[in-house]
Amino acid sequence: MSLQPEANINEIGGAPEKGRARRYRPGRIREKNRERIIAAAEEAFAHHGFRGATIQNIAERAGLPKSNVLYYFSNKQRIYSALFDDIMSRWNAVFSEISPDDDPAEALETFIRTKVEMSRQHPMASRLFAQEIIQGAPFLKDHLRTNVREWVRGRAKVIQQWIDDGRMAPVDPVQLIFLIWSSTQHYADFQVQILMVENKAEYEEQDFEHAANFLTDVILRGCGLEPKTR
Amino acid sequence: MSLQPEANINEIGGAPEKGRARRYRPGRIREKNRERIIAAAEEAFAHHGFRGATIQNIAERAGLPKSNVLYYFSNKQRIYSALFDDIMSRWNAVFSEISPDDDPAEALETFIRTKVEMSRQHPMASRLFAQEIIQGAPFLKDHLRTNVREWVRGRAKVIQQWIDDGRMAPVDPVQLIFLIWSSTQHYADFQVQILMVENKAEYEEQDFEHAANFLTDVILRGCGLEPKTR
DNA sequence: GTCTATAAAGGGATAGAC
DNA sequence: GTCTATCCCTTTATAGAC
Image 1 (cartoon, rainbow over the protein chains, first blue to last red):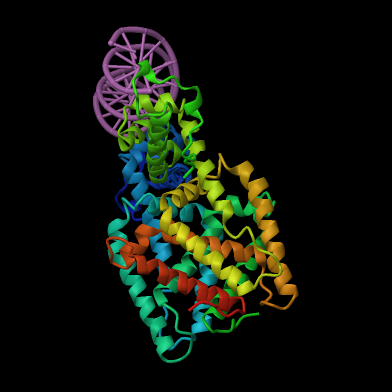
Image 2 (cartoon, chains in turn orange, red, yellow, cyan):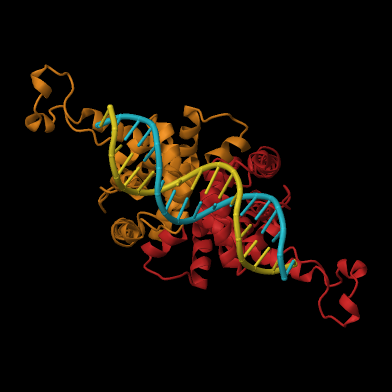
């Protein structure tokens, strides 16, 4: 994610060191290290929250000395913020492109399945986000109040239009969005509980399909719709 | 919670200090302080997780000096564990007394409404529990693997019986329990997000009723049932 | 039972050698 | 760009005066 295209801007300005034919582009190590730190930080913060996570721990996970981490990100907060740039943009992309002309069942099913898929592919990101919200959203409060709020209002409007057109049962659109968020994210955030209850060491591919099918069935039927797929 | 009945055991052994007619029972201050610490710790741990919370912060919230907190609970872990005694027992009581003879719609509706009510009355407890699970359940793993697992199996069995008797749609009982957990706890755990999106400073009484009505409608209909109340 | 003092360890962040 | 050494602060926990 956020990898730049092959032709790197840095190549233009960078003087090849002492004329030797180096195979590295300038900034390449930088990029790689930043990514390793980002990945390590996602785990650390998801595991312990902002205060509980330590730079030392992030450095260890990234396989770098502590001061190296602080060389790339000048302080703890910068690391934390950097994580949410990726997360929020991914997050925003789901269910954004709906219109009143779409088929409600199809659109909602895609929304649910995409969210379950995100829980599968980015569980750490989901947990990190959950931590931030549970802790009172100190860093994301503004973002929630503006961007997320607008996003929800936009989607709710479309759902309300479907209801007004008699194409689905009259349920509160905003609550419906909350229901889909909570039920799908649960598979990432409460993974340990689910695994313990189901007596498994880890998820299998079919578990997510099963979960997505279940949620699609119940929620769509709950909205007076019939699932299209399968 | 966990308040003992009026006749206090301690009264038997306690010598009334210097013969004066004291109005305190021995151990009464102790009890009161313990409760204040418990309440303060719930907030602190819910806010910052185990590592992120500090004894200093708990002491401040409780209005006691730090060493006083460590006098009552010998270390940080003891405070943390003590919290879950209360939480897990409350938690266990909900939806426990169901039988295959019960009406599915009525039983599920009660389950949903009780859980929403718990989110309203004990949001800190819910957040604390969520934190613990997201962080990998280091303290509750055993409890999940044994008690919670058995609890879910028992309830799922009853739901499955309802399905086999043709009294509700054939949905996965365990997934249904997860759905009800996640969707109801969401109102406590993600409170900040919900408030920001709905542009409110705090919840009002009607919000919870509205949420409970919505969830009852959608989930019961999703299970091929009709809500009884209202 | 309460509180001050303090030991011992760990945390974030910076300076500066390489 | 990398890494060691280090400063300074906070944290947990204990000792011991009151």
